[in-house]
Length: 73
Image (cartoon, rainbow, N blue to C red; front, side):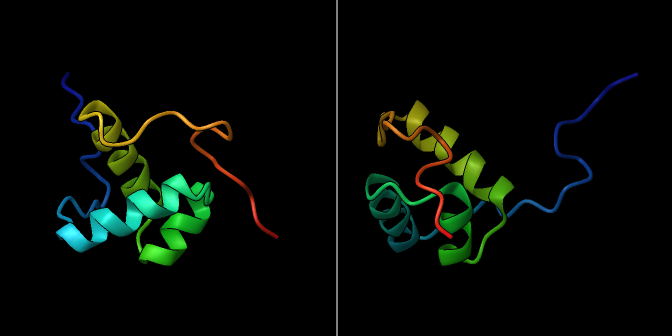
């Protein structure tokens, strides 16, 4: 049996340059994962995968608040 990652998920894989810049600003501002997803109108899964992509490329670094960032009320 073979398992394909995210096979049954609807992931939006493509981002425009301005979306990437917006994401990086939100990330650097400490916005929560949930807040970034809301601001960018994406799922938390989409943003989690973007975080991995950007971290692997060295475009973002770790932050004190971690992947989840500052939770807002």
